[in-house]
Image (cartoon, rainbow over all chains, first blue to last red; front, side, top):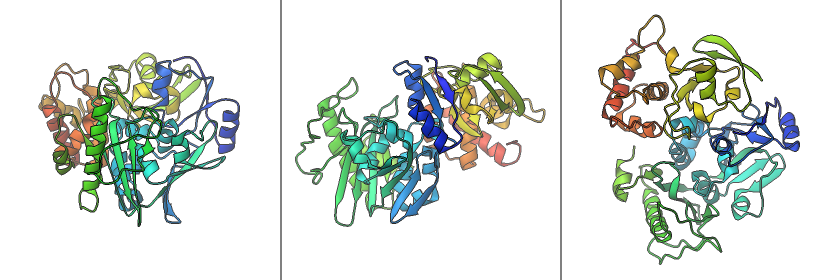
Length: 275
Length: 160
């Protein structure tokens, strides 16, 4: 790690001041610290914001509000999330591993918007809005690249309450990110599908997902499809179709609402065996 | 910068560079070398310790972040004159290790599992072991050890 100055603001006002002077927010650090350690990123100052950011979880005006500093572990075990949107609790419980979930935060996951992150898919399908100190920003604007979060503080994130929703991901065996992940949300008269891991630019809403049996032509606008040593473009496309099927199969059942499918595991079996 | 923390029940202080990782503070400043540096990339879990009772990977947390916090390492789990904590004893009984490099991290993660679930079932243990990698044994005996250690703690032979 390169050297940096470490700041510990005691209030949001002090945090704001630190950011205005160029500091970078440290929340859970599970994305940022690896970047700093590998020296793929260097910064002048770090503002440790965990203590001043909201972490509460509650319902307000028909939406689920989660504090930016809520950890994946806190979300996974929160009664309100489990009751209202079990898919989010179960998604949170399948991010990384328990130690990462004890540190990593929702705000951090959405701010870093990793192209294979789980939360960006959920945020798109559930019409998430980021409440920042500089006003509200729909997550879809971040995903589309029309707005960015530079210099803003994510205070809370609000999610639409779907009639039902589910998430299925094919697990990267080492990094534990999604190779591809598909989040499906049913509203009273619409159905939203968001896909992570497929496009190089990150999660996108698959607007013409149609039904599972429709011909597959996933072209997220002009975005390029990811391709690496783990999965070719064609393989990722095929995964996307299968994962949509898996996610839809969970809707309306008494079973789980989020599954991680590992390499070599037959898909439908993964669902029946999941805890 | 100066930090102070409650480390294995004792008030301790250190003067550190802000970029110091928690695992380096523990190993280099306090000479607690039970937390191992395996991958240093948040994957293997050999550096797992408890901060405020919750498992974290000490290679992916700054030492500065534990200022005024409670930190427990493998050196601090056996208390009240025990030679071994019941979870350590269970790893010994079930032969839940071979070379032992991953073991401190496994034990610390197991204590977080007990905190959350009491006596977790096998599927839960396997789900939560995803971030702790053992390259010698396979996981059969580790899973058995965690289950047995959790039972021992539940029946009161445990401490925390």
